[in-house]
Image 1 (cartoon, helix red, strand yellow):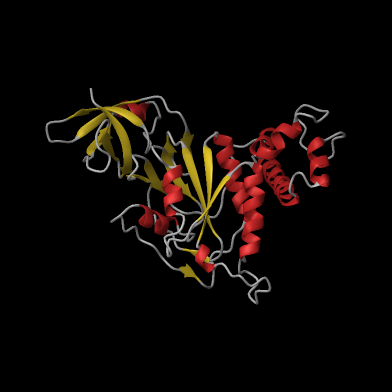
Image 2 (cartoon, one colour):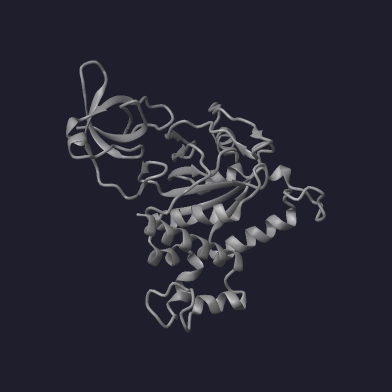
Length: 309
């Protein structure tokens, strides 16, 4: 029985790319899912490796979902190796609290992260910019140094100038990856620069709201020239913490992990506990105050959610 990858799911149909086929040339097989999936409350996801059987009309039926190596709930996709977290340096303005919230959700899945700061052509050299929301070269260097110091790979790109596109492709060589981030940050523009002839729809930023329209309507895996598969995802600006517990939040901040082992109490929440090494590190500047402040905000949000439910 043939195997393949679900590269798109739309209106009850699953578009399966046959395994071993040339990703750039192979045609997908349009499949339906077996009724047994619905009976067992199982939903095939984009990225799933599946077994399928072909029918006489040239279509097919997905008969089995093979074990997943990873699964994201939002966006709904399976077997991802790398999440490319895309944030623009401006238009919309770079929001580090939202960036850290995305990072928490990805770290909770155990999937590797690549940070991508887009629209670098809009950076200003002027340290005394008359527009407060403008991002300067120096400020972006400071932010890049912070996240690289934590252990993240950071790539600066400009789709307009074709800068950083080859670097992104290099990091995604042979991987199944997904682009995630706010609406309007340039995910679709970057993918258009990476994949010749793609022409994904893009939209300008709303000047009144400072954010983009949702130009991507569904999750779809697309082939890269280096043998990888990449998905654009519907943009969104809000995330909840339904999958993250208070006790596990600290582990989603990479720089907390090794330091937290020295805390006096196992399961230390790094609030008011005595001999908390994380708070000591914040006081000493080893952990950035902004990251710790965001940790406290997220911890409060998780506790509030628990009280509501």
